[in-house]
Image (cartoon, rainbow over all chains, first blue to last red; front, side, top):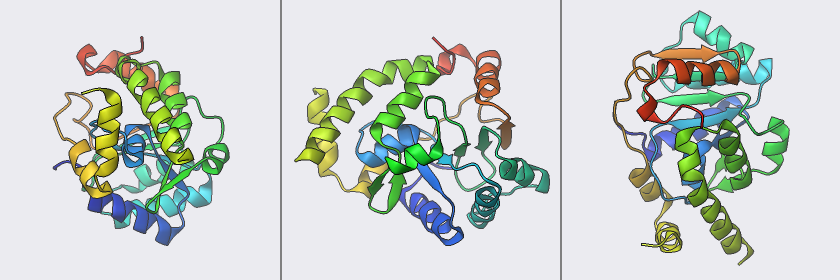
Length: 157
Length: 62
């Protein structure tokens, strides 16, 4: 398996749209879509937790080529807080309850559309990384905050 | 290069190119060894990262 490619991001967007999945790109992959110049390995998606959305999600990721058993599919539909998929064409992390963000609806209201990709607002990406308090996030947060300020100033024009 | 200049340079690149430069693939021991993992709570995932993953991957909490 190689690195995640732009066409695969498009495939996620298109499959999720077809199945009506409510989701947002989050984490460093979300920041990268917003223009943050850095590196990462996985695509991270913040998915709304509801039975209907979970069922639509399973259909979409199976369509993308992820090989899910029925037991695994049931775990996704149930909306476990965190699911790590490495059984498909690319690595995908599904986050149903990211640290630092209270409700999906709040993040959805603040979302940013990047050429058709729904992405968490940089403030939410930062809040979630700050709340995890991991070594790797602690190291990248100052640069990510500087990017948020740059991004906001560009948006204001 | 200062961060601001890096941000400016990235903003000039089209999105597909930004994605191409950003996503890399390297093997991460333990983390990449299972095709599927699910955790009931984020706290369970964080605890697993700290107990199962090598420290140098950086998934441990500060």
